[in-house]
Amino acid sequence: MKRSFSKVLRTLVLAAGLSLTLASGISYAERGAMAPLPSPSGVDIPPKSVPANPNSLANGNQAQSQPANPSIFTSANSDPYNFVSIPDKEASVLIQRSGEQWRVIRNGVITVYGGWLLAIAFFGIAAVFIIKGPIKLHAPLSGQKIKRFNGFERFTHWVMAASFIGLALTGGLILWGKYFAMPLMGGVAYGTFLNICKNIHNYSGPLFTLSVVIFFLLFATRNIPGQGDLTWIKSFGGMFGGKHPPAGFFNFGEKIWFWFGMTFLGLVISGSGLVLDMIVPFMQVEYIRGTMQIANIIHGGASVLMMTMAMGHIYIGSIGMQGSSDGMMSGYVDATWAKEHHELWYNKVNK
Image (tube, rainbow, N blue to C red):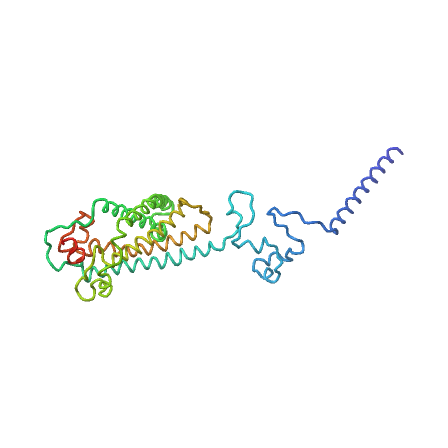
């Protein structure tokens, strides 16, 4: 009996001792300072810089009054790249501020003002056609044909025209389609359709670029400013004076389209498009988020300008002027048309 009592007493004493030891250890741990552990993000936060009230960071008051707040809170909404051990360096930016700027420019400036610019150009051309009609020849057709373009020149022109129209239609759907096509088609059908448009757009781009380069090499020398251009400018292409000013192979209006519309804007669109397709040749380009956003803005803005100018070119070259489409359709133009619109070139051919 005494032996059993002594065993129970020893057990109680041992349990009490262990309990007191554990309690004292916990009490010491609560009072003692503990060194901070490295954070998983690799940014060590000093204990003194931890905000007293983390909830106040939501309204930014404490972040502004205490500049020593942890960098994980103050640098999240920033562009600089930090260190990451994975191949995708874009993951080192938590929130890219320039992404919001890109969205505002694309959906605000380009989409809204670009859409208005295209609408004004379209309805302006329609008004001119309704009020004045096509530009007629002042003399009857002679029946005499003069060769203006050869087969390769016409083939290059139509390849460039077809690829441009395809790019303009698909690009317009990418930029504005969600405002009118998606409500009609529904989200799933529109997404599938837009994916097809995107592939057509991406594969038509290099073909358009190649045709622009070839067309430039074919016609650059014929578009150098020369005789008759100053007269064309003074009369604004014959709008003032009633008589079409003498012009060479191309008049000054066609030269503006060639140098600025087709060559400059065409190459800007092509270059930015190659960046967006990530197929820029002959040079190293970092296809990071910021680069793609800048390329997208340049691509969209230049495309809207080129489409606006192309409306005038297409109108004059089709229904806007009698006989103007013959040159690119058959390669030949009537002598009456050549003499009236390109008198200097007509006189040179008939020497």
